[in-house]
Image 1: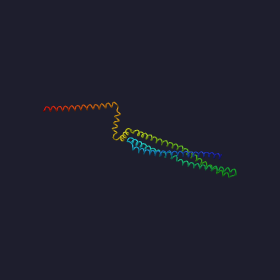
Image 2: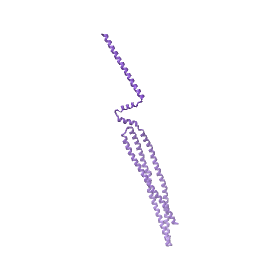
Image 3: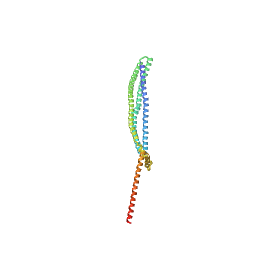
Image 4: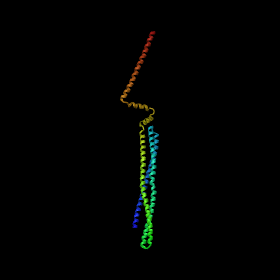
Length: 285
């Protein structure tokens, strides 16, 4: 019966040991992957900073509207990287560090398991020694062995109960911690992406506000600084409708007729003056 009890406790200890090993393995993997995720996010932030710098440099060489639109976009994108930096710091503190702490926790549980196994090995050794003593010398010597066995059994039982309580608390804390870790991860990501949506919306609006026609006009003026206006007038004239052309022609024709009438009146006035001068000359003679 005692032997069966030892076997049952050994099976229990093995199960507890497997549970600790399972946590050690998978929490370690999660910690490494989350840490890599954070590093990738930090590298993305660094690349985005380089992009902001390049956009600002390029914007300084462009026409006014495009320049302002790009600079506004760069400002919004830089703001997003501040939020990304906060995301990196929160992930490091709320996700990676708690998982990393399980390395120390698992080590402590392994020490508890080791103490339990040592006590059980001592108990098993005493039981084996008692059985041998009974077989070889069925005298009072087996009483001493039984006493030693009882002590070993009490020690093993106490250690096993302590381990059971420790592992039970460990399991409870593990579930709580894993819930907290993933809840924090989701919350941090939601906060970042919520802010990102606001920033990207503002950045999109800044890009859409760029006045293409006005910048094109500025470019053309810089390309044709002297004769651009006259060429533009020609293009506008050629683009007039037939009705507009007819009205323009009439206006020109009307102006010509007025000028002709005025010339005729001026000529007639001169002729009248000459006639008057001739009459005066004849009278004097």
